[in-house]
Length: 296
View 1 (cartoon, helix red, strand yellow):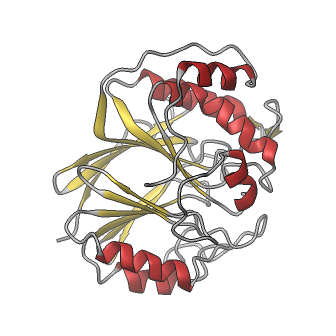
View 2 (cartoon, one colour):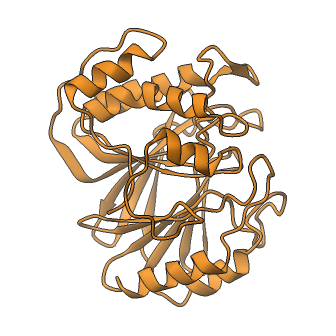
């Protein structure tokens, strides 16, 4: 089964809440939409909840996203967090704080499914989240999340902690090919950290084995989208019929004018609606929807 920080019991929630920065309100669970997914990236949470980088208190931004997710009706089936969960180098305290901040989501029945970025530390992450599920790959944090309308393939492009470029590696690419071939009949969405290095994409610090990944994805027609973070930039485009979704950061942006926030994905027959939820409701892109049509 795919690894996630799953729903909490009330007792577990109170234990987590006690470790967080402020008072937390218990939320009652309500009807969920199995085709609705909250997509987050670049939370950059530090052990210190008051830590500020580029004028942003990262814990406060995640709290705001959390409140928005808890207010959704119906609530999403889950939240996917695309790497750089931690601030700089994946300290254990960073992940403890992340779990504390996410406690109300989990108590409300919204699981978190996480990938790793270059500012994460794989072993510290596994230890903090007490990862007990069987690992498909011992050297990488990967999983397959099967849902009614699509299959999510969570891949791990963390190469070296606090070193910018990413790499999937031959073992993981072979695993991905096998898992895709075992599930040909449903749309496949690939959720990985680093941006692909292709024409019109930034080549700085991206996925070093982009071409090898494309050789796996392109001929397998069930692959409909590759969703990534890393650049702290919101953009939706296509390459060979595959939608490339660059998720906005929850934390800070690199370029002035870019939005921070998250994306609201609603799966539909033949595609999906992808809506930006900016933390600044006055941002020009806030609330705008991209209609993604799956390739045949």
